[in-house]
Length: 134
Image 1: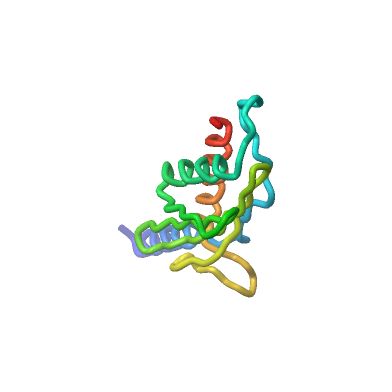
Image 2: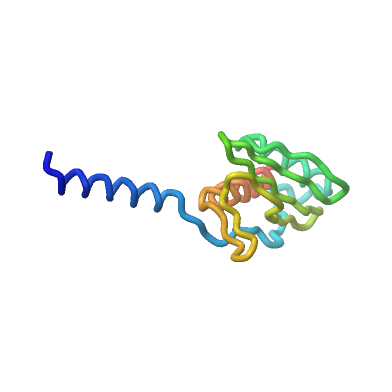
């Protein structure tokens, strides 16, 4: 294999590594409406909390209640840790970044490893799905 070809392959691999480890603006989920399928049953805070716990558990998140209307969810994957605050009520919920480890979070620019944003988007979709089961 020629020297130029080896250098080109090495440069390509390094570029792919850097692209895969990119950062983006922290993705938070602002106030989302609670939409339940059963219109006959009044939705309560506890129902929303249970839906959040089920959604999180299905994706590997550990969800615990901090106080009424506030939960904290943590996801530990390999050497990475993401912790979010989830405010919830009978009518809405939101997901907000709290802290992280090994996700390249930059306080000044509010940027984080792009995998984090995917995890939050998945959690949001899972919560919406669980809420429709109320």
